[in-house]
Structure formats: C-alpha cells, structure tokens
Length: 593
Image 1 (tube, one colour):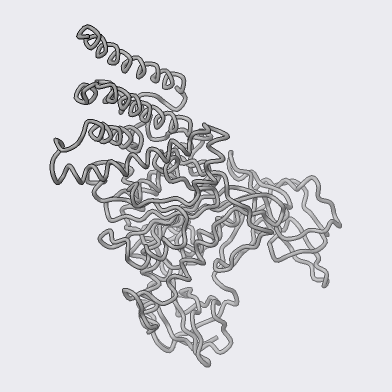
Image 2 (cartoon, rainbow, N blue to C red; image 1 turned 90 degrees about the vertical axis):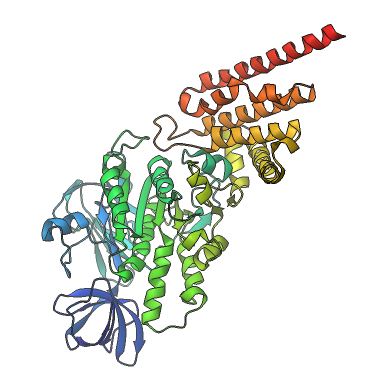
C-alpha cells in the first residue's frame, strides 16, 4: 500500500516502493484504476484512466500486481467496450446514463453459460502447448470460438472437462508443467495489451482484402495482414470509408476502435452497426464485430490504451486461424494523447510538440499487423487500417509523415474531391499501394490476367488528364487537339463510372471483383474505340455527344454484382455504336471519291 503525493490532471505521483513500470494501481476512495508509467526512488508516476476530480493527496494507492490486460474468451463478439475493456452495456445497467467513476465490471459476462465441446483428438496425458485448442464454443451462428491454451503455458494435460454448459470462470482443463505446478484453465484467459501475442513465423501476405470499393480494391489494393492508412481533412469521408470496409470486407472478424472520436460520430456507429446485416452470412453484422468506443471527452490516457486493447483482441482471434480487420479511428487523436501525457511528464517535445518516441510508438503498433502461422499451425491475419486526421489536410505533419513511412497502402483523401461530391474521395495522385504485385497474382488467377495492365493504363490516363486539365485552366479547351479532348473524356469516364461509388446506393454500395474489372475494362474499351475513330477522321464533337457515354457512367448502379452476363453484353452494344459511326462516316467519304 502507498499514498498519493501529487495530482496533475490524470497524472499522479504516488509513493509505492515495490511497484514496477507497467503495473496497474488503484488509487483513492473511488478506487480509480491507473498504470505506472515512471519510477524514481520510492515514487511512481501513474496515469489514471478516469477523471481525477475529487482525489486528494494523502489518499491511499494500491499496486494490483499485473499490467493492463484484457480478458480473452467467449462473449467478446457483439460487445461494446470502453478504452480499457469495460463493457459499456453492463456499466449503463449498473450506473445509468452517467458512468460512475471507479466502477469495475468484468469484460466478459460471468453468469452466462456456454456450450463447450472438447477437442476430439485430445486425451488425458497428452502434451499441450500455448496456442493449442482445448475445444470450442459456438459463440455466434457464424463464428466458432476456439478455447486456446494461453501462449506462455505448456505441459501435460491431466484433466479435460466433458461437453457441457460452463461459465467463463469454471475450469475446463488442468495442465501440469514440467516443474510440477498444475494450472487450471477456464474458457477465458488474460493477456497484457502492450505485449504482442507470439506466433511461429510470419507468412507473406498475398491475398487481397476485398472491400467491395473499386478505388481501393482495383487501384490501391490492401492484402490480408497488411497495413493501411486513410489520411484526410475534416469532411473528406474517412468515417464513411471505414464503415464501408467494416461492413463489406471479406474478413471473418471486424474490430472497430473509436479512438478519441467525437461523441456524435460514435453514437452513429453504435446505433447503426447493430442494425446492419452481414452481407456474407445474412446474419446480424455484430455477430462478427466488436467495438471499442473511446470518445474525445473521455480521459486522454484511456484513449492511449484503447488502440492496444483493440489490437490485442485482434491478435487473439488471429491465433484461432481467422482473418481479422481492425479499424482505428483515429491514430491522430491517439498521438495527441501521447503528446498530452508527455507534456504533463515534462518530457522534451520535438516536432509540433509531439514526444520524440512518436515514430517508434506508431511503428510498434502497426508492426502487430501481419499474416502469420500461429502456435497451433493455423494461418491467421490481422489487417490494420488507421485513419489520420492531419490539421488542415497537411500531409507533411508528423503523424501523417511517420505513418506514411511505416504502412504499405496509403488512401489519401482529398477535400477538393469531397467538395465536388466525388466519393470515395480517394486522391489517385497522392495514394499508393505496395501490394500491387502480390495482389496481381490473385486477380490474374481469380478474375482476369490483364488486371495489372488495365489498372496501370487507367492510372496513366488519369495522370495524363491531370496535365491536360492544367493546360485547359490556362488557355482554354480550344487549345487541345481532338485526341487530347477525348483523353479528358476517357479519364472522366473512369472517374465517374469506376472510381465514384455511392455508399447509399443499394446496388453500388458493394462491387464484386469481377464487376470491378469489367467496369474498368468497358471504360477503357470505349476510350480505345473512340481513339480509333479519331484516327479515321471522325470529329471529336460527334463522339462527345454520344448518349452511350452517360449510359456507361450508370452501368455501376444499373447492374448488380450477380448480373455479370448482362454487364458483359454491354460490350456488344458499345461495339455496335462505334461500328455504326464508322459506317456512317465512311459512306460520305466513298461517295465523294
């Protein structure tokens, strides 16, 4: 036991001689929980996860003997937790609409019983090790939850419970290690959030994460186990993109971390997600989703912890051989929490007031993503997508620039595109992906061998159109040749018919890989056919006035992903239109001769 010596907002100085850095402590009469972040002689610096109003020097402080840890077991999916994994639904029932300080409730329901099925290939006396499955629980209709041996435990199985109903605290197995002690295992175990969960080895990430968003999947792909960032100014659509990814991506588990988000935005998430249907199973989306909600008015140190809570839970499901996507919104506000805590600790600030360890903290967080071979021999992945909110859309600010050096996929959002109602507002000149080569193998095998060539050609056309647009702004459209004017039209067709996608359109909200490629292929086919006619002498005005162009822009919302044959038939219609123009133009020329 010790006492509080000094209070500086959420940072306390306490006298606790034996405490270690990272250990959790409980302080004051309200029993507020915090974490030791510094030591000097018999004094410890503690960051408290709740508001410290009402605390007084002299009140007691108690070391709890363990670091900040999360409970991992059945009951996580569908849950809504705060930044230190307290269940918000249970807290509301216990304290009403105003969250009582110091209220300590377990993350997993202790009263609920789960149907446990032991692993059929296990027998008493078998040697077990961390990561092995002792059995399983059907957590939701679509997710079977494996009960794993904690990673740091190995030994001989001396007891395994039969199939039956158990609470998360009841013992379902006993393991004796080589030194003699017997460990009792329940349906859940704890793991410290700042310690990455171990695995056998990293595997190359080569399967793209299909989000159903054309500008992401086709132009700037992300793989399962990859790292991505979504930077953009206020109003550019970061939250909508992340909601679309959470709803439509083909990962088995989705974890949404609202890190320092405005309360009204998180309310929208909390109200909308439970009502959504999983398009892959037809079941409620929350059956494979969990939310870590930490709003901007909550204590800043809990915001700093929330991303670690989310990534640790993601690693736990990865260890079960599942593909997990974690969406962190936003890492900028997490970095602001680091800056505020560093300031209270009187640490030397560097660029824009951020601590010197900002880059290393970002790197260690993103490094926990990846596709791995688990301790049990399964393959699982954690895909990490972090949004960044640079002030004024300045991508040179520290959080964005450091993140850009760490990740491999960069979905840069443009305020100009958002103001023009072009959504998703992903800037194709600023964005990039380092997973194109790995994704190309999947696209060539599962969709079309010419995917990489079509993608490269479309990006080159868009880049060429950007140059021509600057010329038009200077000297006007009349200065362009017929081929250049058609190039502008071809780029416009790609922008409006392929890149632009409405999250509110029932047909266009999701686009399958096959439909994505076909829409791009048709747009490029129109462009090539037009260029051929221009070379034959057809006036560009005749091509620009074709009703086909506006019709092609509506293919995306006219045909569903299941209507591929009807969409393929559009190619014959396009060819017929250009053939008629070719015939009509050549007849007068022949009569003149």
